[in-house]
Length: 398
Image (tube, rainbow, N blue to C red; front, top):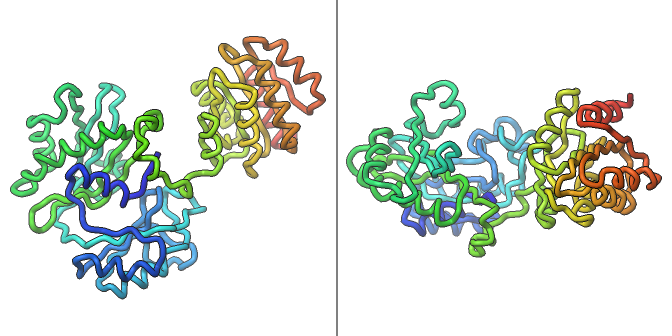
């Protein structure tokens, strides 16, 4: 689960992280009061969407010369004017794709005098099985670009879960970032605070970019992105109100109700597969034969007829889908259950695109018989390679 910047900062503030004063607003009518509640005289008006690159983004409705999704305002009047321009319009960034995202909320924040911009994030290091800090002196930039052009400027430090962030860990981070004076002193508390917040709330990613050194020498979290591990959601009822479903794909929301692993993609062939590895292989082979997958969808090993029906309905609800490939290897999952689910879904929502089904494994004979006797226009496949070629050919009209 992703949350907005203002929510991330509010959470980090409860742990003691240094953040600027700010107010989230949902209509332009709230802008003046929000700005007047802050110290000023500089304010930052920030679009709140679940995507990066907001500052360099462009609003579809405002033309190519308009300012981006993060703007510096020098008066309360400018805050109001910017708010009227930004709210309700569509911000396009390098992470949103051409469709962009509608800005439904803004964060009005007190300005900061910046001396240096640094990068700091925490994530789970799969190689060590530990939470790791990733830091760089190149803050404010895309960390991917830094990794590509100057990888030596990125340092990763895994933290021992038995000790947490030690003085030695902090000293290494301080040295790497070149912190001195007040900033070095602030770091003694900030890095343990970030680690504690990450672990206690079961985050999967915490990114502070930039972490700034201000002209007065102190550190401040200028931007924050937070994602939580969905598998730990049952432990954190207090975090559920932070979820903003307007930022999520409607099909992914529907899939979550049935405990389906679904991710919407940009292709035209819908996929229903059991097992993440098999799903990835299915997507790869679709691309190999010249088409693009419309989704990742793993129904899991113990899917019921109802779950399969829901999965099929989610796929067919995507207007971009021009064909569907069902690829099931039945171990725990039974092929006859898949077949019954597909038939139930087709009868409920109809089928207007080609459907290729490849079944193998437990009760495969019964599954194929159910499909054969259904009267549906189903293209049967013998293996994954055969299935991929058939669905691509069907979509292309061959």
